[in-house]
Length: 222
Image 1 (cartoon, one colour):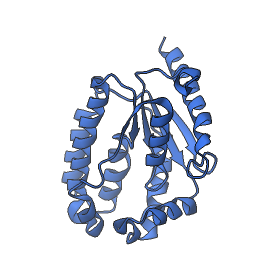
Image 2 (cartoon, one colour):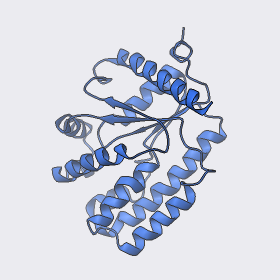
Image 3 (spheres, one colour):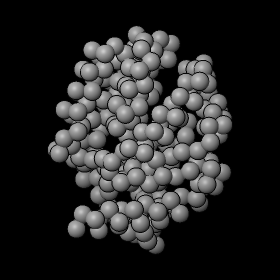
Image 4 (spheres, one colour):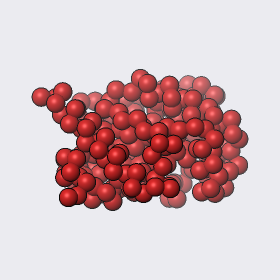
């Protein structure tokens, strides 16, 4: 019996994965897409025209980067639902405003005018009854030292050159943000308990928990 059938995961489900840089979102996306026979939707890092520039000059490029991400994620989220669901998504659209734009504004990397423009645009596009929200968010969390080790292993130069203080700040903001997130149900997973790098079969207990959460959410809607 396939895992999707075994744990009664709807064919049309859209599941998004959130968490700080290096926590294992892409790994979990691939594992769940394979286990459930869903499509995988990945964050477009290699084709992003602003990302490398941003890491070299936060203040100059933060607004450009956030607008680019907002447009790309909005298009991707609409596409997933137009296809009829059946997607695992690597990183959510909600993190852009709740963490990244807010952080750069507070640190002086984005002006008050740019931040207001960005948040107004985000609210008009996303925070409406017409925008299709995911059925479930999986929030990945773990010890900072393990996350830093994963960042080191994947070897992206723009991340290697980023001060450790940036990643500490990022993790703290993620922890604050997820506690107040209510756009869809949230399943929290600790990467130290479900290590897909070392144990591929760890995906089944995750699927089981997903099935339970989706069933609970469906019963509330009735």
